Length: 106
Length: 116
Image 1 (cartoon, chains in turn blue, red):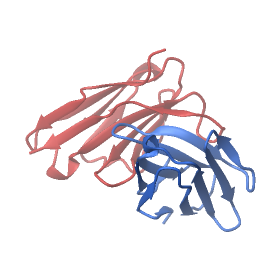
Image 2 (cartoon, rainbow over the protein chains, first blue to last red):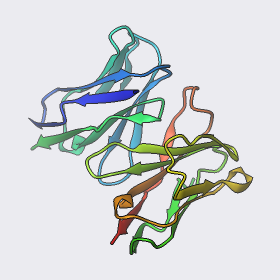
Image 3 (spheres, each protein chain N blue to C red):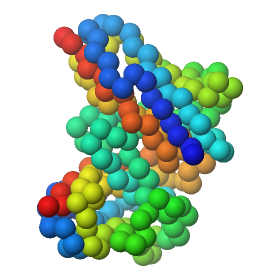
């Protein structure tokens, strides 16, 4: 059965800290790995990764994919309270993990 | 530019009643997705359309759920009859090109369904 597993399920850090969120996957035919941020409403798209080892970056957020070890990480540097959200990863917009709930303390 | 529009935003019904959700994707987006999200879980894909064709409906409980996307634009998801376990947020999303191409996906605000 195809699945996506995220860890940790929840994380509390102080503002200014750097966090790393993990996403591992087991799928029959891998196509892409996506990261989303979900606050109190619908998910918003962050990154789409298809190739190993190529970092995608947007401001303080970055992500990379390892297709050999079947995982991806999402890094957030210099965290701010506005980064508090649930971060979801998904394979090909189809199979989602349960998300990591990130809370940033001021 | 308007985003993905969904209605209603909230719906409360009694079990065994029918319910329908409507979604209007971003103009020009030919791929449309319906997801169900339970509390504390990630979205679960119910059905994906490319234009008016349902290309992935393997997770749609076909005994009670149905969907249509006439003319390849807006879409309706129906549940008949609703069960207590159907209480969830139903999300619609759209994207410009088929799933396998690098693309951004946009979600609507969702419909929160409560079945009593």
